[in-house]
Length: 321
Image (tube, rainbow, N blue to C red):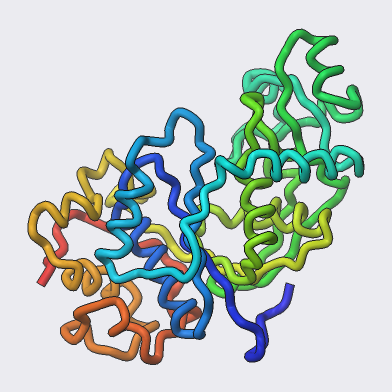
């Protein structure tokens, strides 16, 4: 993976998941992704990542697009939905299976937890020990022999360490065998998991620059392995810090209603929200906050690398002047 040169058209994406409404943390990440792309004259794709089963809410995609437009964030292509692409993802799974890079697994989460060697599992869950690796050639065979619906896991080569340079976090090295082990790429409900779907989408949509929250930095390592397995070019990554509550945890319902929608309903303007968000990355902009009226006002002199990697704390008391 290398930094894009000045002759390459930068292609990025906004990829909301229609499982709820946008909150301030989402809005900040999407704003930064939009500013980075537009400041580089790039092409923006809007993708709705709607594979999260029962969590997907009717009408959430439409509301997400309304909120993005209200903030002044536009796109050149899309929306592209994932659900109609299931057969495409399945064909890529088959390629990995045929190459011996994916295998069916019938282990439950409890099985994995009981077999985990690490006493303190990370955010990705306990380390999977590879119990099912090499046992069956197909999902049908696994189900016949065990009576259980299998998922599919990507087989991480022994001793694999993924190294890459992140535009925000810098040099990053991930020992994936010790950070979750072989990971799920196809779920038991016969849908692709996030890691596989995102790689396939980014490759087919020619995404070469990814800006997203730093809670997904370990996913970058897994996705790089999948990119490499297919011979796809690896995009450049930038993982921006999250908005957290006073407890240091990622912004969520427990911190109160921080959705863009509720601010809109209170009569707060998009300019007020933009100024509040921009106040969290003043090192990356050259315009005074009181001159920000729309998203495009932030573009002159914007530098994503200057945003910083420290979490942004929300205490619910910011003044929206």
